[in-house]
Amino acid sequence: MATPIDACSTFLVRHAWLTLRGVVAEALVEHDLSVAQFASLLLLDESPGMSVADVARKVSTARQSANEMLTGLEKAGLVERKPHPTDRRSQQIFLTAAGRVRLDEAIPTVQAVEARLSSGFSADELAVVSAWLRRMTEAPAAQSEELPTL
Image (cartoon, rainbow, N blue to C red):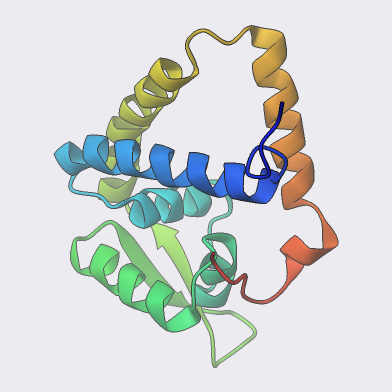
């Protein structure tokens, strides 16, 4: 019989995220990255030239928090800011060569954690979970300026 907690996917996803985040955070220590920094490097690799607001939206944080985190990455030489070509009030953010190296070194570490945590699941089960999570990120509520965290 399912408990009320089991029937609430929001709580289960949050609990899974917190567990995964903790394990990934421990693994990323060897790369001198936080989970948010790693996620930002991944995003900037996928979409070079994002603004601070874009990064904040994608990592579900406030713009000020994202700016502080990106400033740390910039001081570490992992990202660089360039003026936006059409918006004088905005800057675009790009990975540096050092950022690319750090990301390339960290990705296998995170993948190993994910592989360890997903062992015992079939490829079909993992595909369903991945499809569900991707669809949830495309839901209209997920497109808001800033997503509140639980």
